[in-house]
Amino acid sequence: MGNRLNASQLALGSIAISLIVLALKLVAWWVTGSIALFSDALESLVNVGGAFLAWLAVRYASRPADAGHPFGHHKAEYFSAVAEGIMIIIAAFLILEQSIYALMRPIAPADWGMAGLWINAVAMVANLLWARLLIGRGGALRSPALVAGGRHLMSDVWTSVGVLFGLGLALWTGWSWLDPALALIVAVNILREGYGVVASSVNGLMDSAAPPDEREEIEEIIHRSAEGALQVHGLKTRRAGTALFVEFHMVVAGMMTVRAAHDICDRVEDAIRAELPEAKVNIHVEPEHKLEKTGISPR
Image (tube, rainbow, N blue to C red; front, side):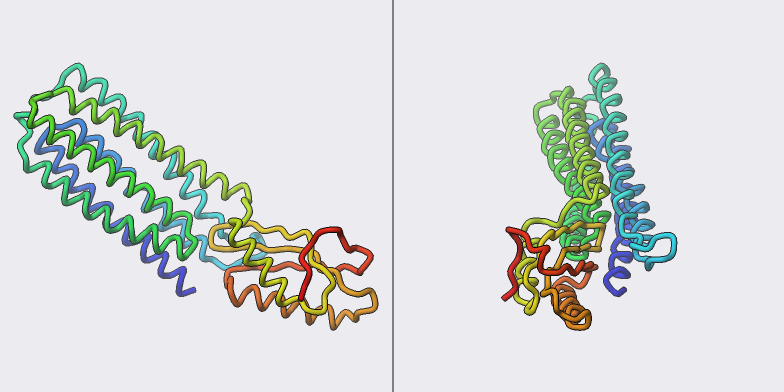
């Protein structure tokens, strides 16, 4: 429960950071009138909405299983991530619209001043620090909502880097077309990021298997802890937010008592949970005539 509270606190912190960054970027846009800075601010507005959804999702996902949701509420975070991805895509199209309009009516770079660029740079640094925290801690907590938020913030950071570099170049050269051109590039980058967030989250909703390295770890645990069984086969895994579901068939001698087979199951389950605490293990015991040609052989 402590980990989930920590995730909830991070999600709540994201709302505060996103609001601060949004305010800074809006000021930067207001000072300069730059369409590229407007696009950067619009992406931060999406960050605020995404952070709020992530906070709600993390809180809901932490609820224990109940009669209506016997496998828990872990997938709630994927819905949050999908929603954030959709908002990112909508923001990208809004920026595209504004960029095309600005290409026809560009603002002279000399009218911008440097104050707006410095303000945007401060916002960028804040985003960078928080994004690194979200990705690192969100990955450790296996929180799709936090990781999606962190990835989006990192995209925002790279957007800001490109915008600041381009606007600095525009100030130096006087090329007013650079501003809306940069906004177009920003829009394409945001669109790509939005697609990535949606795709990865939908993959989670589709019960994707655990990563290969995690599956190998489970196989090794079974190999060393299933002593007394003849074979384990049919291993299946799936991730649902923070939860890991593991199921397999365990073949035992036909004359083995139910108690003895149950003891082996308990030992294997305990061994898996000792290294993967979030695992929910389901074992189907079978008699020896169910042996298959391939499987995991216990020590």
